[in-house]
Amino acid sequence: MTGTDTPRSAADMMSGLMGNVSNLVRNEVDLARAETAESLSRVGGILAWMAVALVLGIVGLNLLAVSLVSALVWAGLDPQWATLAVGLGLLVLAAVVLLSARSALHQIGFMPTRTARNVQRDAAAIRNSLHEQ
Image 1 (cartoon, rainbow, N blue to C red):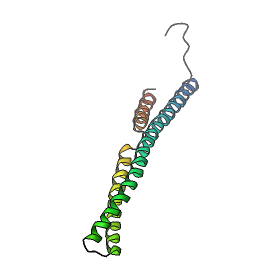
Image 2 (image 1 turned 45 degrees about the vertical axis):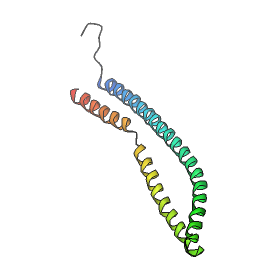
Image 3 (image 1 turned 180 degrees about the vertical axis):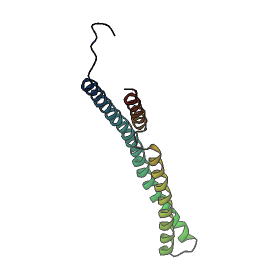
Image 4 (image 1 turned 120 degrees about the horizontal axis):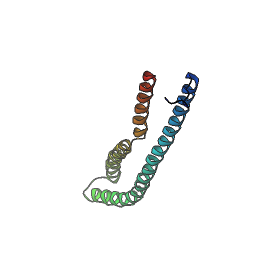
């Protein structure tokens, strides 16, 4: 320590520490916002493609369903039973597609993982600095 240096009081050190912690928390909140916005952007793109697939699928399934019902009627099945069989088959197919899409959404994840890692690292650094004083 030189002659011009003055020792810092405990209040000054705590004030400085609280200012640093405040800045750190603010930065972590900003990072969490950025990560959440990135995830929502990706989800929006996936949902748009799912909507396009839904429209195309509805048109295609309508045509295939009519053709399948006609084929079953031509094969000798009553029209009511043919329609019921095709309808049930399409409902099962819809359930499989829905579960697959839900799984894709879960894989994206909405938790800001980088922020969580940074907060843990920062908390450890704060604990270490408090133990050193």
